Image 1 (cartoon, one colour):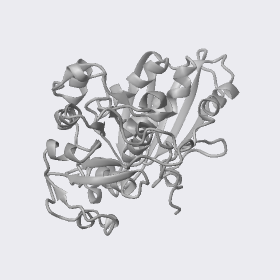
Image 2 (image 1 turned 30 degrees about the vertical axis):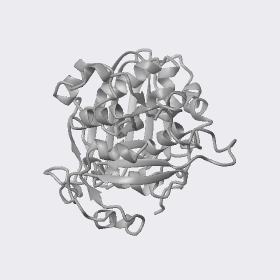
Image 3 (image 1 turned 60 degrees about the vertical axis):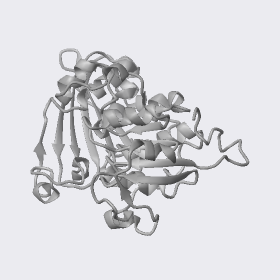
Image 4 (image 1 turned 45 degrees about the vertical axis):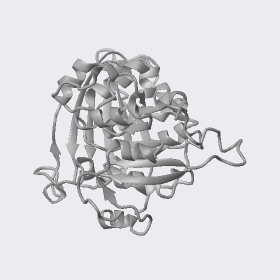
Amino acid sequence: MDTLPVSVSLSTASALPRPCRVAVVGATGYGGAELLRHLLVHPHVVVTRLVAKDNLGKRLGQVHLSLDGLTDLRIEDATPEQVVGDADLVCVGLPHKVSAQVVARYADLGAAVIDLSGDFRLQDAATYQRYYEVAHPLPERLGTFVYGLPEVHRAALAGARKVASPGCFATAITLALLPFARAGLLRGRVRVTAMTGSSGSGANPALGTHHPLRAQTLRAYKPLTHQHTPEIEQNLRLAGAHDLTLDFVPVSAPLVRGILTTCWFEVDGAVDPADLIALPNRQFASEKLIRVLHDRLPEVNAVAGSMYVELATSVDERVVDGRRTVLAHSAIDNLIKGGAGQAIQALNLMLGCDEFTGLLAPAQWP
């Protein structure tokens, strides 16, 4: 299988080849639920298998109640050979450190793969070992996956066979800072704090991540050591940042979905504040999923349940020691644009169909 079934743009095709057969590995997690919410109603996809190690034999609707009645498929512990026997593309939603060998096996068997873990996002094995605290099992394969952020790698994703889908924090922070990196304004130390909802910790509760334990509190965790730090630094350096050091502090927030970030850095005080504020608009003017705000700051409620990204820029009028502070703000849904929905966006590009198929529904309100 050298190409995926849908290989022509919808805008030029009167009839499409058969739907792409897609299997979901890790189907019982929150990421799996979000993948299937999109895939089961996708006009160019048929879901062929639901694979997991838990809830075996159950119907999908017994595990994810919102998906009841959408498929008769049941959860199974199928082998990679069984999965690839009736799947053209495999979406793998397994935890990092576990995913690498599984993803590599699917790729070796000839399937296209989208990996939602962090195992193939980085290009350097030593950096992976520092932040993930284990040696990468397949260091020779680092750098062989397309990084699945369409706003940056759209052309490379078209027809790609192996995709590493970005992390949720990495998506929100990269998009907030990307215009400034590309303009050559991101240098030295960049500080970020980002609040995230409990769904980002996965479906299995643990002390400190279970929602009843975090619903009435705010708590910083993994300060300066979060595994998305090198992913963000890699993205921004490739975009033009110089001598970059990211000081990133994630915060566990009392909400289920969403990420809200505030990033701040300094620029030469002679740079016109109006030019700084205009940069994200110029960068993302043609992006359907990105809203650049000027009359308010981003809010999670405005994007939760959707693929949309909100961005805004604040500039300090004060110049101190020749430097001026810039703040870049962003908000996303961590499970959708920060996770499974973004994987569907990449899948659409891989198939050659319209990139935004099934992804343009607005957020819920309230």
